[in-house]
Amino acid sequence: MARTLISGGTIISATGRTTGDVLIEGESVAAILAPGQAASLGVTADRVIDATGKYVVPGGIDVHTHMELPFGGTNASDTFETGTIAAAWGGVTTIVDFAVQKTGENVHESLAAWHEKAAGNCAIDYGFHQIIGGVDEESLKAMTYLVDNEGVTSFKLFMAYPGVFYADDGQILRAMQNASETGAMIMMHAENGIAIDVLVAQSLARGQTDPYFHSLTRPAELEGEATHRAIQLAKVAGNVPLYIVHMSASEALEEVAAAQHAGMNVFAETCPQYLYLSLEDQLMQPGFEGAKWVCSTPLRTKHEHHHRDLWKGLRMNELAVVSTDHCPFCMKDQKELGLGNFSAIPNGIGGVEHRMELLYQGVVNGEITLERWVETCSTTPARMFGLDRKGAIAPGMDADILVWDPTRRTKIGINDKHHMNMDHSAYEGFEIDGKVDTVLSRGTVVVENDTFTGSVGHGRYVKRGLSTYLH
Ligand code: URP
Ligand code: ZN
Ligand code: ZN
Image (cartoon, rainbow, N blue to C red; front, side):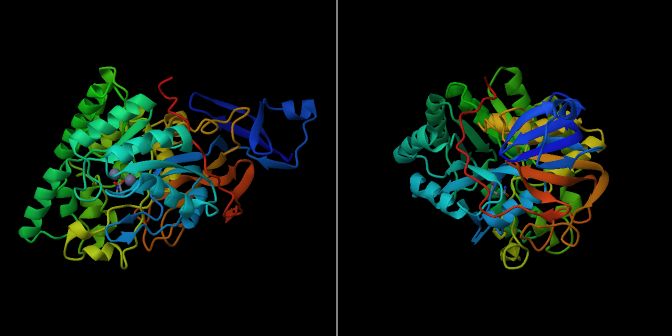
């Protein structure tokens, strides 16, 4: 079995840091050795990676991506191949993508279709959540089957997008009751889509068609209201584990914090776009430029306290996870579908490549600690979604490891470092303190010396267990 030694780095976990060596045998971590121990024990390795002066952290886990998602009359522009290679470049070693069942479709067929898109095409490991766009007897039965047999233990429901993915309160309650029997996690897109559709129609009727009206017609109150309603439904369903996705608003965070204080199994994630970008600085750029940042939930105004509150939520564990909601669309031929009508702009931002970098900048800026960076971007995502062999550097775990160089810098943008299949970057011009140095996926070096050294097909499907965050 091939042996690799990552030597001399500072190994960061969710709970602390230590200097030492990581010994990898084959695909797993074999041992963590104190400085000098490898030499005194006569440990030999086929390969030594010098991590002196660098951080050695568990590979990033992005539990919210949408490769090839059919949405808004087009498909997300990253395939599983391009998207997972870009993820590897950004220090990510596992993604959990969403298989999609729309109303009238069969859940098993939709999951099979996602397996077909991904199998043999991924550079890093991957799992699936299942979107349930049509709650009925058949899909409820399928939910149970997927938990028991397919390693799919989380289901996303939508309170938004009437006519596409929308589930009404009765349907949501039924799906939650099913999850409370199996132990599955309900993931919720919490926005009041019925009210939003009224505001969108009124805005368009007034001739307000520019991209920024996307945010003005999805007010924070309607994210807060839907979050509150989802929490109450989860309570009625027996305190079923509920995970609010892509949170952008202080109003929603307050609801989650209150539920947590009341002892409920309610969790939430946010995404880098909600920590760094805003209505004024991005969505309101002149002409159609703002379309680059049309996503849902939307970017919020910088004149309220959403950014500040979300960072606080990350420190306080009211927000347990940072994901990207990676859902890239090019401007040309894709975002352009909404020229003259913001509601026809495909919703989504690409960012799978930049989450580790952007959150590390939060460490440099004093918002979170190195340990919290690791916890929110790797350790908790693994525990939250039953990725039992991932998210920590410890004997027996998959050797998914990111070596991070804090002395270098990263420029983000299409001209500098960008491997996602997009004709623009949502973070164009951002400069980050620190840089991805080396990335290992199950013991194989997939990025080093600014080169992708992995291979398409290396990534394997990971069957997930139930969330261990509650146990
Ligand atoms: O704008 C977004 N978030 N697009 C992807 C679909 C979703 O709701 O997550
Ligand atoms: Zn969503
Ligand atoms: Zn999403």
